Length: 65
Image (cartoon, rainbow, N blue to C red; front, side, top):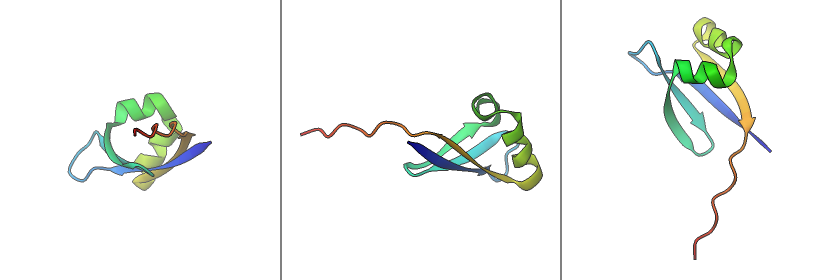
């Protein structure tokens, strides 16, 4: 199963991204994002200001009783 991540620049920064997933929004450094998703995804960010990527979904958390 895969999930879609929506990525955009954090306003006022040159190296921080806001990555939104179905689980919430996190801040990522652009270098980490490039290592995971490659240069073409970073190029899309520089040209359009946002990108959409997919990755393997994380396993659901186990229910704790």
